[in-house]
Each structure stands twice: as C-alpha cells, then as structure tokens.
Image (cartoon, rainbow, N blue to C red; front, top):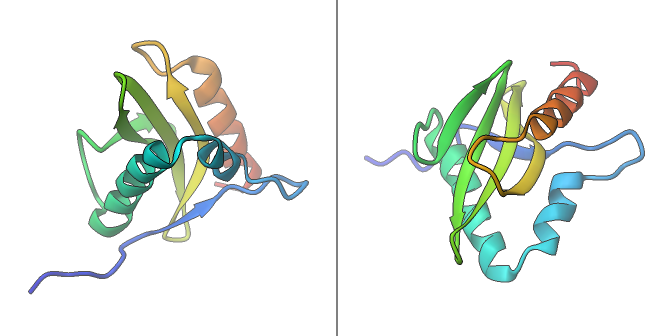
Length: 116
C-alpha cells in the first residue's frame, strides 16, 4: 500500500511585519516555474526524508529544495525544520555554482528569528 500522507507540511517564513518573502518570490515566477518549484517542495513534503537530486542538506539546520527550470536556470528554496514542519526561509534563482553565502546567511538569520 502506498503511503499518501504528508510527512511534513510546508509553511512560509513570516517576518515581524507579516511579509512572506518566499511566497512573494514564488508569485513573481512564471506559472511554469511556480509549478516546477511547487512540485519539488511537494516531493519533499510527501517523501521526507528525500535526498539528491531534489533535496540537499546545507548544514547548520538548513536544507535546500533543488529545482531545474527551463532555459538552464536553477531555483533553490532554503528551509529549516520546526515542530515537524518545513519552514521555507529563502527562495532564489541560482546564478553561480555554489550557493551564495549571503543567501545562506539570510536563511540562517530567518531561522534564528523563528527560534530554531
């Protein structure tokens, strides 16, 4: 029997002012790109723990959801775990081979802000 239950629930990080930066980033993407990133996030929700190529640990309590978009573009959604939920902290289109340190620093700052 196939387990169709979510193992994690994805939730957007919410700033002190009520903004949800990852949600805002997703809404700026094209419908096709949103579909791809959303499907990859859903894969993590239902399949946790998931490894490469969809998900990879970054260290320090952070993971990334890895999405391949059309036009050889790469999207990343960085998340942490809190109370059995994946909290989406940072989303961006990757332009370099390594994840930029400033994106990891921002995700780390947001992770600390929610108390994990």
